[in-house]
Length: 113
Length: 119
Image (tube, rainbow over the protein chains, first blue to last red):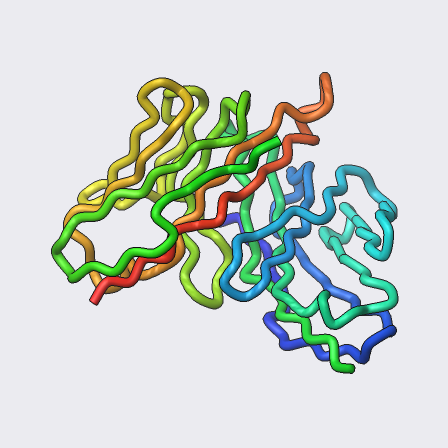
């Protein structure tokens, strides 16, 4: 059973600080990694994707991937109250015939003023 | 570019009744997914279509759930009869073509979802 693990939180971070969200996955064949943000009562919104080891930056967001450790993380710099949401880590194994994405259960992030 | 459309947004039914959800993917997206998301959990894939063919329905409870995508565009998901444990948000998603020659870059976009309550 392929798994994607996240700490459910809540993770409380002061406004302006760096929020660090972590995710581990079980399948070494995984090739594509995604972070989705989900506000309460809303659907998931894709905010970052990463495919190669290392860092990928987009504005205040940085995704980090370490395939050897089977670990992917999301850093949010200068955290804002609007960043308060659940963050879903998602992983896709290209070698399955259906190329299915597996989602973690999400980490709830709360930015305190 | 218009996003994934779903209807209805909310539905309340009694157990043993039937219900249907509709999805229209982003224009040109050949791959369509239906997910079930129970409160506090990540989305769980129910079924995946490539054009009008089923690619993966391994987690679809086929005794009560059915889905179709007859013309390779719109899709419907039906539950008959509904159970209390079917109360969840049903999300439709479609997958973009990605960057040329790199299947890693397939990205998936969700519709607003349908919140189903079974009483």
